[in-house]
Image 1 (cartoon, rainbow over the protein chains, first blue to last red):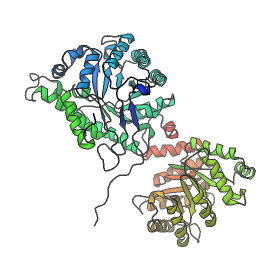
Image 2: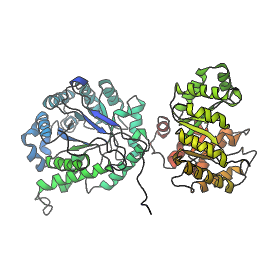
Image 3: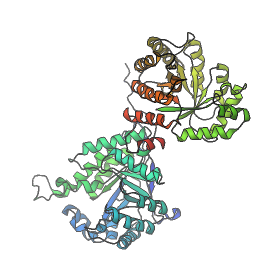
Image 4: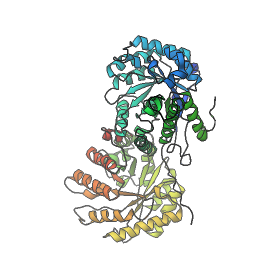
Length: 323
Length: 262
């Protein structure tokens, strides 16, 4: 008796989203990045096209780098004192995108002004040629003040800007429409809300093809199984034709992994866990490869060793990365 | 719910007038309105409006295609007309319909397969509409067998167990539900199951209510397609909500708008 073919057939694919713009395209980037395009579940290449190789973004902050765990401070060194230098270091480590987090604009975290944020963004744009993801503090009023200014300064650069949420989307959608940026749509690991944010953005005129989903996730050991099931449901709905869930997915891996004590704890704090220099990157890389199988399209990473390990895993599926 | 909009039919006076006066605008507006309301496909029926059934059908399709590229269901009971029209229809198309007699299936199923069309197969033969459940299931099995024989993908088959007006045939509504339950076991993956929903409430009061409630009941028994009025927004709300409750779509607070914005 023949072995039954249990491969699923899918009727739709994940949207392809391109980030960045070269001088011919109206920006100043030396390269652009395209993500998405998969026609099956994460990593199941026999069911449909794998799509574009997921992209690795590296996290850079506008300020506050001194609060990172020692294992990260050691590899970034003095570059943490300037967003531009940090970004250059990130590109050395393999960043295809810079994820600039304007957390210093948080009212309780420095309350940097919109002008300072714009200066930071300009400095990073000048320092590196890769495309940008720019992420506000998450405080709605402040984001609505800072991010439109930034959008205008970076007009034409085709960044991803975030985040919009169910409760706060109109201002940022208008700014991204005017200055032609992509949008990062956030939901608290809730597929219903992920869909709702997208339809809200769509209702005020933003094209669904220009949205990237940020589902918020978790790290290894802190509920990754639940994350997988939510991301899988999202991908299944997308593949069966739900246009409100066909957006590529961004995962904030470094942030999640490095707040776990298994990653950030020093050798003295967690004796018996193994050396911190090895443990942290391994925690981050393992989180990332799991999220790859859940269907992640953009990884926001921190440690160069974790980036290297993730790239080695991705090479298994996509072949060596073109440079 | 695969909704096939029923409003382009020569039995309706506006469509009849459009066909007779060659007023394409009316047809185009009906096509757009139904698609915007959430129809997945559009039924096209010349009805009594013209003696040139082929010419009128192609004229209707031509006007629909000026504004819409969703599938069209070519609705005519005569083989000669179907055979001539189907190869000339651009884009996705559905043959509406074939009865379940063997000699008819041997013509209609290959016509669908060769032209990459979907097919609506009625559980109805020369003896008429079955009065019971078993005969419906038997005819559904005959249709499925012919599709396998002639190489028509089961995903392109819609089986219609035939609903009759509730005021005329009170037992048939329940027979259809019971036969849906059984027919969905005939083949894995199952074909689509479809009803001409409006027929249920012909000449009844509270038509929309009857259609709404039965649509939800039939969905629970395995129905996944209906020829119906997509401009009846309450009926469409029911169709969309059954998709949600059967797990075919993902909930969000704006699920009604989300389904219509597809």
